[in-house]
Image (cartoon, rainbow, N blue to C red; front, top):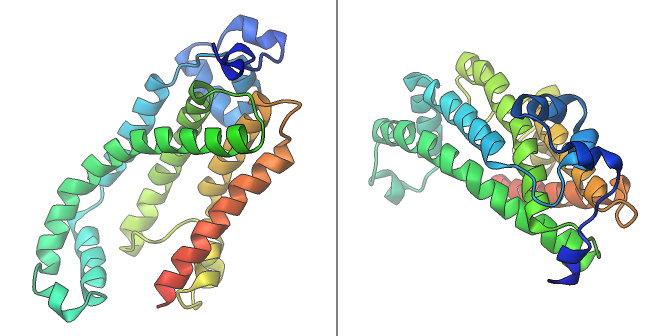
Length: 239
């Protein structure tokens, strides 16, 4: 058994009570995530909450009206190179998107959970000396993705009303005239549910690695990665 597995963090007596029922874990994800993460133990449950997050996100994609898909496809088509436009019409793009997006959302939720858990293990374990296991990070990420799924469901009416699926409940709404670029991308990344999701993950990292990694350090690294990715996306969008 590796030293990391042998010394997987067990922080307080709350772990003795176990993770709790599915309903309790869902509620605690939103109201008391720190307490939840301290109870998860070395092999946290994850498949049930991840499946719920995937279903909610997929349902939101299915409920997007055809006209919103068409408007989104037309904008994308207008931004394509002339040669690329010949391959597919906006109407065809919209039809394909309506079929592929729900499937991609469902599968993507599981891919996201495993990828992010692996990234947290790499950054906070191998690079920063944290003792939490991949399974523990997967449990944290899977539960926190319920917040992301809720964000998609809450933003759905905004997409329907505006006809713009790029709209987020973010700081970018305060500067609608701002052109696409790094600043706009950074503001867009500060979506309410995005910040909430990442903050809960940072709390999970700090809880699992108590005494090794602080909440401030975890949040600094996680939000630093967010802003770095947003800046790169902004540079690409600005071109």
